[in-house]
Length: 141
Image (cartoon, rainbow, N blue to C red; front, top):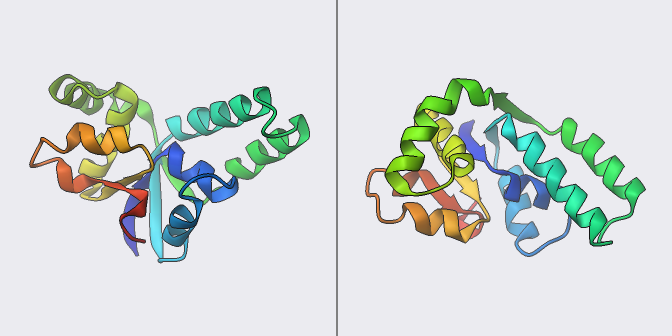
């Protein structure tokens, strides 16, 4: 099993039909082991909250989705354990600490971050040593 770091933009697509949902779900079928900083649950829950506020989901649907997200097959790593590396990466790249937490974990695991955030992909494209560690969800699976 290949280790992959998945960010919240991908995990939400596993559960909610959005642009690139099919691409995100293909990664599930490809036999990978998924990892993420424990920030994943705050980010995915916040996304569900936004969808409820915009009436894209009912309150009950949102509550069920949050429960389903809690059972997702992603091994989490404490943000505390990644904070130093993430801060250094954020300073070096100009990316947010949030994005950098995922990148720090990918570097630690010698893995790739799968994201649906094109700005994240573009933000590391100019860094030769980091570029291979962040790929867009549509890049395979």
